[in-house]
Length: 72
Image (cartoon, rainbow, N blue to C red; front, side):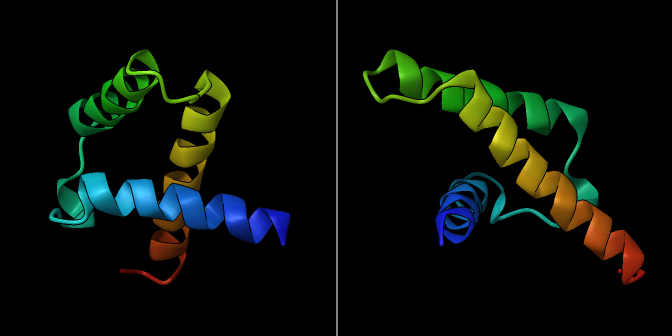
């Protein structure tokens, strides 16, 4: 249950930021923009640690890995 909640939260943030993009169009620049965007949330008083941001990016990495495995 805890892992499901964690991935669900990450997927929500990823969809909010990347939902309008095709996977093939996501670049390093976009990943850096996501990291900055999430970091700015922390500066606005929301408790987001660097580890949480890394988990969000790890979730995205898993998505890319599965897409590659499925030859998407």
